[in-house]
Image: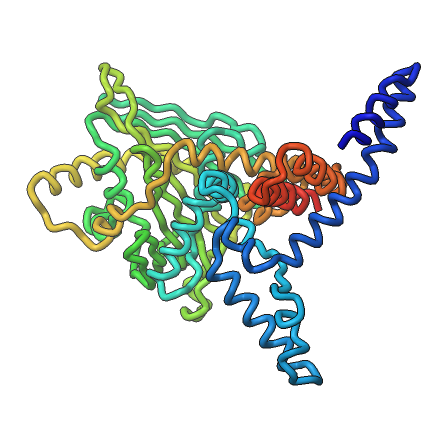
Length: 449
């Protein structure tokens, strides 16, 4: 110890700071190398008595026994006296992810795992429950569809500008409509409807209830409806529709998927065309593959004051198989005539519900929603923006912090490991501290690879 102090004093007597720094580096370099070698050897060649210092003793003993038994069974010499345990008195043990996590304090483990799974928690839980409820099949309407609808509602989808088409007001009903023409695909329509004295739940059930849609004839284009599949956990439906088209157009057939998310009291209702090979195609009616009609239904302020109104923001487009300019002309001419039938239909539906009429199966399924918080929805949108900027896949964005990955790629792995060695040797000589530091460094090194 005295020799080390004398050497340090001699180094500090150097005339310049650069000389002192260089001498310190030369002095500490061999020490760091020796500590690194000792740390690696001690980690790989861990004696049995040290296992109890970091926990998980039983599991480590079993691991060492299984490794020794497998190595001895494959060895050419079956003599027990030649085994590693017999010669050295301790097991040859290699750390794994689980062993490192078991050695970390529980609070650190929770922080590391929570940070990794925070954004995917709701998504993975919802999809796993959905797969179990639907017999393992992939749901036709998924969280990605919720993200798309949310960006449409918030006007953050980076699409073309909306062109205002119509504005109408009645005492208990208001309507605005817009249109835009994407670079490819059919014209897209957006509308905002305000129903006075209506709750979001009633309006949600009203638009979902195809039985009432046909019996009341507020949507006189619907000729046939049938439920092909349903998920009682999420309320997801796969439906078969046949709709009549006016004048010279033949009827159209649809296979559509439906699902509703409850986002802090606002209902995001997705309806889109989905493939259904079990239902064969026919020449007539002609099947429409590209179909999208989704709503955001939420409470709104009434024109008379108070939150007694209900706002419905609709997004609709479909490729009906006719020229798009002709389709735009037909929509423009028939839009108000179709829309003004909705409000009387809603009032009749309200009266039927107040009278205690039995709920249809569609209305019952409309009450089965997937609950999502608005903060979680904002995180999903932020992940989409980050994934676009960094040009990474959706799966990577949902399972890792993309900004952390981008930063980690610019830092070589050996800096993480080297820094961990220096930190472990500087702070503490305890095995637990080194396990903690190396566990965190290993996590960051993998993120940067």
